[in-house]
Length: 442
Image (cartoon, rainbow, N blue to C red; front, side, top):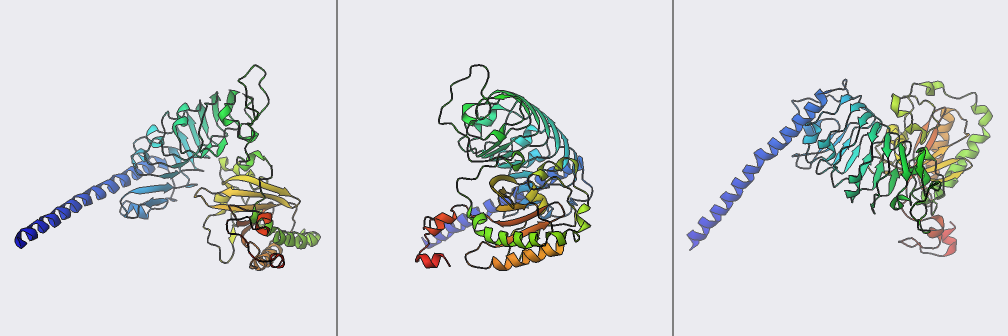
């Protein structure tokens, strides 16, 4: 009996070992095919030396490539502003069957978007903004997509009605293309941000999309209906309950409504900001002679000028001027990422405008763009150091980063998802503030 049990156990262990060993070649073969797909893609486009992908090294170590934890599949490809010039060939990136994130933004890619890329089964986010892509969009997309950003290209044709099938879609940005025809009735309950501005669309805006603000549809002369002007011809009745959503589009449209509650990150940081403004404005005359000439450097590539209007006035930004992170900050984005972030206006004050910026990787911060502040670079840095020290107080939100140039001055704070100063004072947040009133005044 014991021998029988031992023999059975041995057979089970042997079967498990054979099963596991059979998986190993499959994993290697899968990663090998994805590596070849990436090499095929990059061989068809000019890329200078920015990628430096070596076929003799692991694909998981390549710049812009992120693999699964077991190093068996390519999960992400992020090569923004990598100087890619050329066409995305079919049967290249379309073979990355496990790909979840694709970011090729801010390159000079041309031609159409291959259908096999748009329909990758695991794809969740695709960022192709600021290229020179053209032609119509594919009729089929991955059902798992939550973010689509094709803005600032030259796509034509109609907005595909098949987008209605993307039930997980939260962001759809098609602004600054040449789409024509009518807008399909996209009844997507998950959709939070929609931007179809600056195209050639016409007709009535579907009722399902009338909750979005005017900026989502602006610069389409043929469009009418809420939230734009009423159509001149009879149109389907609109519910009086329909109203523009408080959700705003990217900053280029300047829908400058104050949010439902002024974000606590801006409110509690206001004292520190006010300190900066008072000191800087006091020395305004002196600062005029000290303005650094470093910021006269050249701007970035051709199609990247428009998004800079989100946080900048359109002035050129020198390469030497970088985003400066302060002590204790764990953020890893750069100025380019910040300038291209989707954003919404939180509020406009005497000293500038505050924005909620959502970066490509999902990081959310508050950016304050200062206006009418004239100061030398060293003087500005000194004021940032002062604010950094003030931010160490338990009741103040710390300054995380800042940017200085002649034309632009930005400061970055953490974004607090819920709450306001009023809610914090009266204990209305999830974790209520306890203690007597004198304690809250501290």
